[in-house]
Image 1 (cartoon, helix red, strand yellow):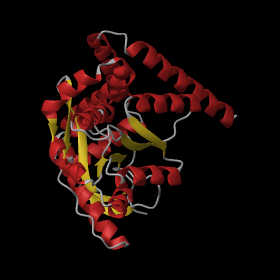
Image 2: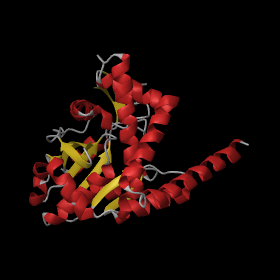
Image 3: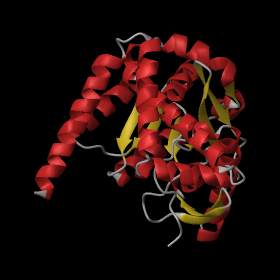
Image 4: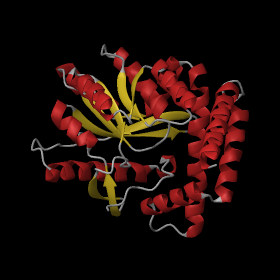
Length: 305
């Protein structure tokens, strides 16, 4: 019975996502926005496990917030998360040049972070779950083309169930100009990321949650956490410049805030990894604190064992 229930849940999820892709791109933006906001508000009122986890994570960002302030922040964050999904469903029907133009005034630090490419050095962006990272990727692909660089970015995604849903997400992101590799193929993912960065290209990794169980213990937003060491190790092995980047929403448009390069010690050791990952955690904390409602972390932040 558990296996049957699992397959049923997968089938329902797949049908729901398919309906989202079929409908969201065809609805007027105002109508779609109201529908998804209503869904976010309903989920907030129901206060399920994901919402409670989001509240606990946001309490790290705003430790002095009273319960009413935190409730308002959670409501805005859930609406921001719903907006991501609304736009993800509609993105294939949107004009990439228009997205680039709308985001360009709010893309802070991107130009400086891309300067190493002119010297043949790769650039690796480490991101928290924030804003609309797909739109940020579309912007980056367009920006690379505008500057005469290879307009492809390599990234890693978690495998989704059912398989049909995962295949659709792969096709969707590849159509946006991303080279996408599955996280459950770690050797393939490492080869693709390494090849891209050593060739002087660009890669992006979500890095505010350790899923491998082999992360590094750090202090993140004032509490112990475990974050992945992969970005720091990739930067060291390839010579790429490692930058924190936080996609955000900017009114009806989009933005991204890219921090300064994270220094990665040349020494290969757990201690040097910890130093670089702690610097990345500190940078994430500063970026998220500027706009916490766009941090879509509805899962536990990995705590040290």
